[in-house]
Structure formats: structure tokens, C-alpha cells
Length: 283
Image (cartoon, rainbow, N blue to C red; front, side):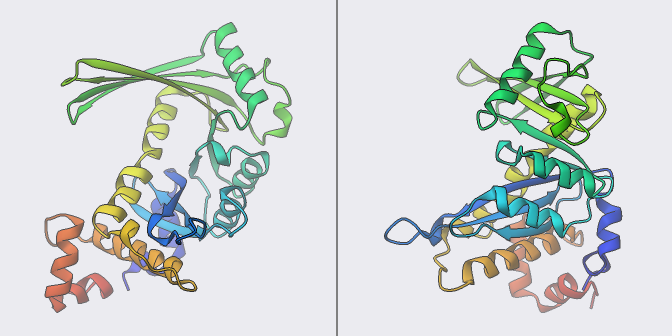
């Protein structure tokens, strides 16, 4: 096996200072005829390195709130920035990240109504300490993301309950679709243990979406994960793990050019290439 995949210390060095995005994905093909038994996996994604660091299946009668702490517990988070959507905006999760020597950026939505109201009021009443604007073009659209950061937490109740809370963040995103000639706007809010530096926070929040675009989307398109009907026992969980291991190996290979789907086919046709992927040796 490749050295970086063998050694936890090697992986820790690769992810230090980088964004580790946590997000869940339902395996749609595991739904039974009664519409109940849907397998849901929570993954950790090293955004800059394009690596799946780990995954955890949510319990049948639970959700991501219980699965996320269990996944974080097996990760080396020292020096990383953990980003999680609103379901992970929990005091215990924030404390756990800090205890594991990481920093956090947690989305704030309606599941934390009091906190969300305080954050919105803060941006209405106080001037931002730091502002950054980034513009992306591609796929027929232009997206502008304006990040405003406040270090003044005087209008936030019970800040002491959020471990190492240092700032609140507002992202105002405008997406212009060239073909339709229309714009759509969205405002998102976050809390963070990082310093109130808008440029870094804007980039880190943007990186979080890599788990959707570079992991979940690829698993569906290149691996057909949502089409898989494996349900018996732990089959769905086990095969999802194998898919993520395979994706890590394919992404790290630079010997040939091509898509993930194309490299999968090459590995099926060419035993030498398959051996190279698995043990890192060229014939």
C-alpha cells in the first residue's frame, strides 16, 4: 500500500492547516419498499488534498449529530479547520474539535434559533472588523461571495458555552446565470474559533463544498453509488468504504491522464496499472 495510506502521521502532515469538511450522504439505492431503511454515511474530506479521511454510518434510529462525534474521534485534527453544516452546530461538537486541537467553522441555521437571531442582530448593529470579496466564473455563471467577519460578540448570548468562539461570519453570495440573465442571492451565517480574518474564512467556507462536488458527486457519477441496491447486513456500508478507498487511490495517481471513471476502466483492463494503484509499484 502507498506510504501516505499506511501511515496516520503522514496523513496528519498532509492535512495540517487544511480544511477537513464533514458532511453526510444518503445511499438512495438502499431504500426498501417500505421507504424506511435508508443507509446514511457521514464522511470526512481533506479539501486541499482530495482525500477521504474516514466515514461513519449513522445509527438506524439516530442522525448525524451522534455520528459526527464518533467520526471526529478517530481523526487527527491537530492544526486543521473542521467545517460542518448546520446539523453539526452543537456545543459538544465545537468542544470536541477544540479538545482535539483543531479549529471549527460551523454553519448557523434555524436549528439554533436563538444563536441565529443573535448573529443576525450583530451584523445589523455592528460594523464588520474584516471584509473580503471573491469572484468565480465558470459553467455559465458568475458568483460573488462577500465575507464579513465580526469579532465583537457582545450581542451573542452564552458565548461561554461555545468553546474558543472568536468570531461570527456572514457570507452574502450572488450568483448570476448568463444564459438566463438572472441572479439569485443567498446569505449564510457561521461561528468560528479562527481569528476574524475574512480572506481566510471566505476561502475555507468555499472549500467545504468540495465534499459535495469532488466526493459525493463523483461517487454517484463515477461509481454509481446511488444506483447500488446492496442492502443485506453491512453490505452498503462496506461497499461505500471500498468506494472511498478506491477513490483515494485513483485521485493520487498521476501516471495517466483521464477521469476517475476512465481510470477505473484502465485498472480493470490493465493488471500492471491495477498493481501500481494498489502497491505503488510500476512494472
